Amino acid sequence: MAGPTYQDGYWYSADGLRLHYRDYPGDAARAPILCIPGLTRNARDFEGVAARLAGTRRVIAVDLRGRGESEYAADPLTYVPQVYLQDLLALIVEHDLPPLVAFGTSLGGLMTMLIALTDRAFLAGVLLNDIGPVLGAEGMARIRSYVGREQSFAGWDEAAQAIAAPHTATFPNYTAKDWRQWAYRVCRRDADGRIRFDYDMAIATPFKLPVPDPAFDLWPAFQSLHGLPTLLVRGEHSDVLEAETASEMAHRLPEMDFVTLPGIGHTPTLEEPEVAAAIDHLLEAVDQE
Image 1 (tube, helix red, strand yellow):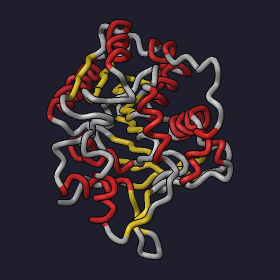
Image 2 (cartoon, rainbow, N blue to C red):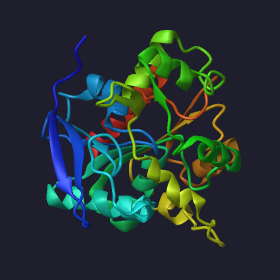
Image 3 (tube, rainbow, N blue to C red):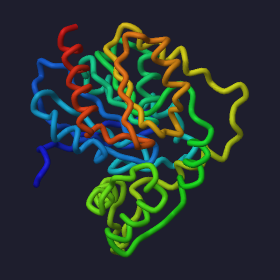
């Protein structure tokens, strides 16, 4: 079944990269949704979200630099949140976008909080998908263990099996069809016919640098969401957004809606029925502002 129709859109970073987004049309009278993917993901991650919501409002799903159809950076040290933030602000300003409902998955959620800290007027509402101001040490170690590791596969089934192997405990109810869909979303077929992950392996370079001491405090960025309709989504077994951090987020922002998905880890797809209902509630709150 074909997904909703979109147009390919582009904008330029301060250092001259041509960056890509998918633009799904919708009701211009409503706040559009800006979908920001996780570290190794791309705009295709939000195909299910767009399939449900496009038409009712505009949905913009971005490829961060070095991912999907966005250009790769010459300097791998630009694969850092400060530069991603500059890129996203350039998109908003260059295209004169109205206040947005940001759906941020993992890294995308960090970027959403930084947008709010920089200029909250850019945002009409926020969804943070399995991310918070404190990153779980176990989850970060797990991510460092695989990001930037070059792999290629003979076909889509082989790619799906490779993706499933380390994630079966995280998504115990996934079927072969689910794993294959995951592969389609995160991989591409190259000119040599091999299937590869659809991002620049050099995004791992900043992970090799020493961790700053003290670490950057993201709690002020999170608390800048106060007064905005906000939804937090967490996988019950997430090792990136730990239960203690999520509980503290709910304490500091008591008006925030909070959904925990049982039996899964990092990250929910945002297509789960419980999340779909919470998203509808979030968007209703945005429309009433």
